[in-house]
Image (cartoon, rainbow, N blue to C red; front, top):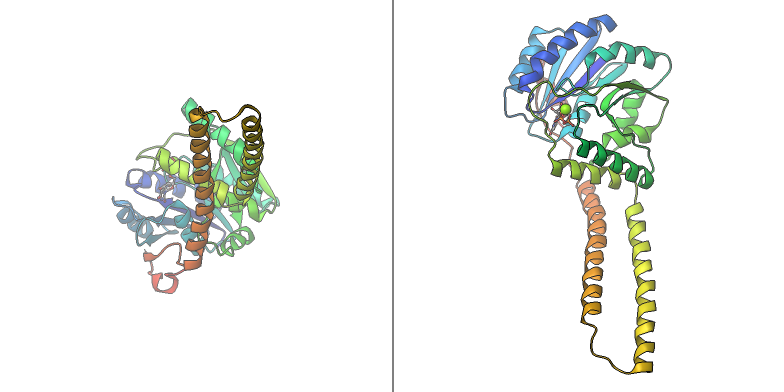
Length: 315
Ligand code: UDP
Ligand code: MG
């Protein structure tokens, strides 16, 4: 097999037909030996029905249906797990990742790379979101050990050995964008103009984005724990200086009762910082807890056109 395309789909019924048409038009230009793996991530609309139909009507199309919604990262891994080709592309179902770029990306990969990453402009996005993303990437790149680029999403083409490397990582909590950077190998970047969703709705609420952002930071290092130590140390030093000042002041000018403001400020600040640091520690602890349970990242309920679910329910 020359080329596998992995597409995570969660409630993408509105766009799936379009996607199937565009992929069927562009893929034969690259190779005739391709497969498209539509991963249904517990959709509640007609996505699975359409995926089933596509797998019957379009040669090369297959589907993997997860038993419920496990999230995009898990859906991607499920797809990668089922991909059999020597080059594997990952793209969103909503046509925000133009399939027409694939021929060039394949050429680039063949010219000696293991990863070809598509980087989008933030064209058509709200100013607030662009500014927030920029800030986030700036902070993240200061914090984490792998480099994450603004605008680089999950639209990428990988060589077999890059995918094998990704799949060999045993962790449960996956932050694929970071892992792709972590595995290394020669990476080329191509740019494209941001495309707005062709139908359906984005699954990313502000809250989900925030959680995704925190995942990005915590998955790749323990610098936040180190920051907690520094913060604690800094506050201890400040508290010690202030305590010395208070003691000396009391010795010199006697007991003065006023000090309510100082007390309240000190208690509130220390309480806040305590909770924050505890939260950071708790977050790591939670991750360890999840990893130690060793549950699979996803379960499969159906695959097609030929049902191979029995062979690969667990990963
Ligand atoms: N997706 C998924 N599971 C989820 C959420 C999203 O498989 O729980 C898929 C979704 O169907 C789409 C891709 O991930 O193909 C990107 O999602 P979306 O377009 O909502 O994200 P955005 O482009 O807004 O970042
Ligand atoms: Mg999208």
